[in-house]
Amino acid sequence: MNRKWVLGAAIAVGLPVLACMGWMGSIFSSFPAMQGARIDGGSFLGVETGGAYAWVVPTATGVILVDAGIDPAAAALLAEIGDRPVHAVLITHGHFDHVAGLAGLDEPVAWIGAADLPLATGEALPSGTMPWIFSRLMGPPAASPSLKPLEASSLTIDGTEVRAIAMPGHTGGSTSWVIGDTVFTGDAAFGHPDHIEPAHSAFCDDIGQARQSLRALEGVADRLADGHAGLHEGLQARLRH
Image (cartoon, rainbow, N blue to C red; front, side, top):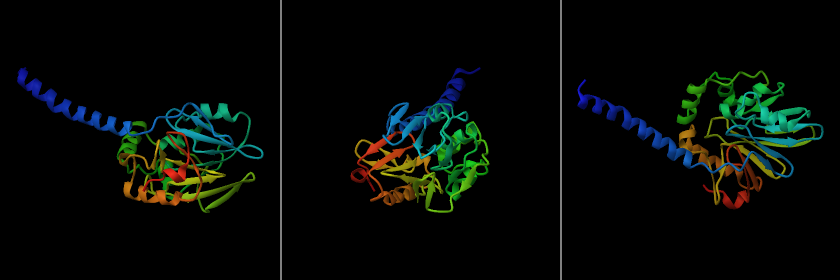
């Protein structure tokens, strides 16, 4: 076989692969570092589930979860919850790394923005480039009969008041949840050392809309708990538009 042909073929294949790897590396380097396997928020806990945080919020007789994490067995979550009943799961958006853990729970009601219900059940594919790639590699999340489209902007769950804020852009149905002095944003807003911004554009359906949605956080709370970095104080001072 002609060596020049082999070399040319190797270059033709290798350069796009290297370029793709460099592109992906630049994307992931833009993410803030995760804060650890377990985050103590005082009145709640963050649990690292294998690349994404789920949040455990104690209530009068059990817990509320914000997101269910990436592990279909929900092992880390179940270890943290113990024998406490899960009264509800508040889903920030329908990507697999936030809903997969529903399969390991005992079918508690799981509220999700209506536009993201087909995404969470595998009936629709993500629009963002990177979520689309991951969904093709990993397959759709296991359908959960506990998923319900959100129909109200406020809920009372086992005596705990919860407010839902629509923040489309990362996905069409992205929803942040306000409990006490903390807003749980999933991937709609990430905390960085000196600012707040949405996930990288490669992970968003519409990055322009995602940036506009940050305005919905103004005056809401002063602590932000996101889906991949952790817990952040001083939200209002760090909002960036």
